Length: 162
Image 1: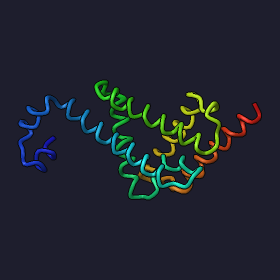
Image 2: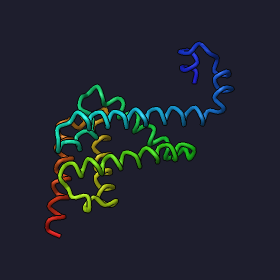
Image 3: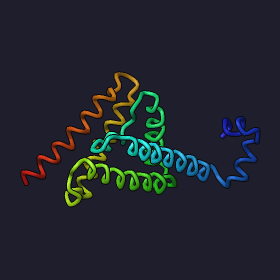
């Protein structure tokens, strides 16, 4: 709050007065971060080769890891701050919908993209993002992409055997 006040040249008390409450400011900041995250994924999906849209859900370069790390921090904060849970929850639903579309675009039949399957891929994706943002020995971007492809391949194999 103080940093925002310094950057805008407005007192922290004035910011709080005009923006209602600390919780409101945090919700707005989380919403802006979520929108930027969804926009980044959507942009990467548009510039990714056909069949590779799943890769759009992971950062392409080390410079993009900071934004991923910030979003992970918001998600963790929301676990303990009930007022943020609707904002983070909406983002997760929106990303899951994009993720489902990305899975279909890799050739998986739409009928096979169930909520349980999307949740499994989303959980794997979340774990990869966390591993990529580790302070010590972070998972390499190429290894994360390969892991994501591997889980999709396993899902396809399981569906064809069933």
